Image (cartoon, rainbow, N blue to C red; front, top):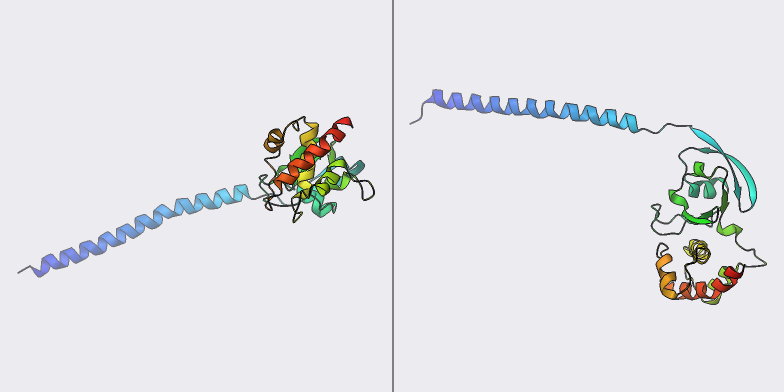
Length: 205
């Protein structure tokens, strides 16, 4: 038969162990919480920081005071009302926001608006007109190279760049250099055909 004094000793020992474990656990969490708070305060963005940018947008000079953290896509859509460039993935993976800066295609969702200072920006609104479509726009219509149309502005901007970059010689090359633009409707056959049709006319200028 066990001694009552032994049971009392064991009960006290368990209690002490639990109390000690709790103290260790809590004290171990405090530095982590303090570090997390310090880290979040260090990473907090500054509010109200703006920069002035001067640029050409579709051939027209423009000056804007913008949030230093704004993307080019947000500036185009929210400040200039140019909503042709679409916000698809917002990670530069779908191509729906493609525009040209100094003639080169870029994903405007990944481009800081502040970086266009002194540059020439072209969006789908600056390509062709209602009366005279750009050859690539007409080719997209001729080959039904669109369905829902959401990705089409970015597809056309990328397609024009694809031709001007000299990457429209074969269907395989076109597919390779258009691979950054996703069409969730699957109009890829029509897109390739449209680029093949428009390429000679664009190359002639």
